[in-house]
Image 1 (cartoon, rainbow, N blue to C red):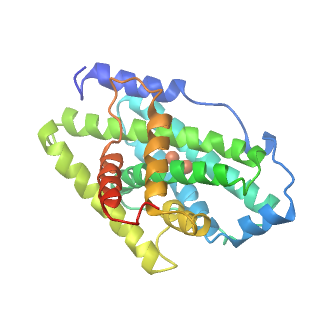
Image 2 (tube, rainbow, N blue to C red; image 1 turned 90 degrees about the horizontal axis):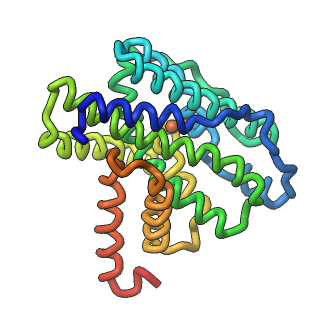
Length: 276
Ligand SMILES: [Fe+2]
Ligand SMILES: [Fe+2]
């Protein structure tokens, strides 16, 4: 299948639209939490950032969708906007239910939502890679009840669909519009990932940094004190593979970060004592 072709477009749009699940946050079986998991959730520093990230995403993608002429791509983008808005509602519901520390979200506005969406998409690929692994480590730790993790399983599943859709949408857009050919795609993608990584660096340095990379960094910092970098990387790589395994192999997958992680994992295994 030729990347950038109509067949490619139909496949990634259809895969996304058919993967949509119907649910409303308030109808999910939210568990009553004991003091220990409640304390843990309330001690996390990520709620304001994570909430703002989700609150920005829906309106931003809706603005992008409105400017897209192709009805198939517009439908998929509108659906992603709906799902991101539902993530924001899910987060609001959870923050209220468990009385979590989070500031009220600010309204989204942007003169250039398309550029923001492209940055957002690469950040999501990076965040999801870390988020999938972190989610599994939390599950294994049994620090939070399975009933709560099951609710977030919906979000994880949707994020996997978002990053596959974005990866293919971006490649389709670049090749079909003639902005650049496939040979130029890898360096452009690397450049966007470098921007996403710089945001993470800012987040580590400054507590009030932009919310984009909140989950991967602040989440990992709060949950993984006793874990080795190698175990975290291995879990992220394995979970990323597992969650993307079900997609049609003709689609492009976000491979840049997993490849980088595999190199880092190999490097760590060569350093005595780092994998213990
Ligand atoms: Fe989201
Ligand atoms: Fe998303």
